[in-house]
Image: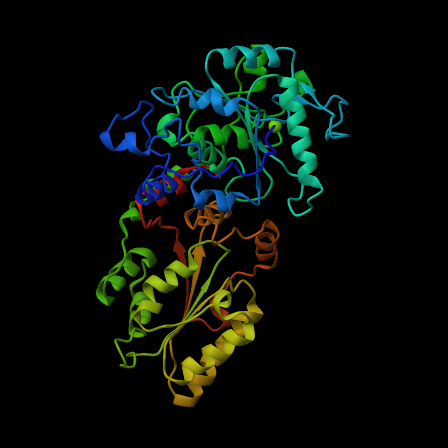
Length: 476
Ligand SMILES: [Mg+2]
């Protein structure tokens, strides 16, 4: 039995350019039927091309996704890759295929498991005989990937479960909080690359069964609310048919919860058309669309400088908002590009370095944009004092503007994950605890602090590519 680690590298017959195409493959807008285009046949896996993982995807996943394949699975699948799409019967693990034999909420021992219902094993056998690939996608919470002790234990458990279920299968276990964790589709992308590309999967016949369906509490049945809706969202993100274990294994009526946050609705905002400004004039035009207050836009505009020239009026802008609300994108697109000195904690390291850089820029007569969360009055005052010092020195009052990113909390949580996916994990998500900390300490900026204007900036979707837009549209 393979040890669940990386599949043996076997040279690929696919040219490097094609491999990159696979790595960046997107699932959105995908037709359920094979396109049959001449170009596709080159990227499709043939039985002699066993190594399908793209390096990029694998490297990203290797630390946090456990991958298990039971004996015989590969031979079975690859024989069919030649001229058929494979339907995937996908399952969540805990609470779907298995329950804890002990009846405890969490397993009491590594081998504490039993089939979820008596029809699990016969159903899987039937699916296998019908030619489905049986694939498990499981989020694992309690096992810290850094504690090596936990990983071999988990592998042992999955091997035992596969043996009990008695069919060839593949299992992916997301061990970390990243883009491989459901409802994100990273594990599904690993499967697709494993099968030689999304075009080898028959989405129209594929389906996913999971118990995290967002179902509300049902007192009459003495049933608690589902702890999550991540399984339902995972299926919708692919998109493939979704069933609860009750519906799939027990023939009960299909029931699913409603999803509170639907990212797609933000795509219909008119401002999707707000593009990348190519000159100062365009930047001002876009700012007017975003800010809807002409006088504030003109104050900002007076702080623009072209080349070495000093701005008309030195201007101080502070951006305030929760993590992942687009502060840096805004600051760079509209201000830093036009001569504003960009002050940012992530790149400068500490508050005192930021303050020092801001002071130096102001003394040089430059306009400044402070791009941090700035949710605390004390921090804001520290910067405002610098601007006031400068005012006294030159006996001229510069405009001081605060722009607050007006992004609902559920949307910024979404953007936090989206950024991680669009950067292929280079920018990892801000942990919950940091986001909570921001909201807990937040004191909304107020003109009394010394701002000439405090303005809300509404969320406007803007995407670098169609690919990024599709990522945004998925549930997180
Ligand atoms: Mg579950």
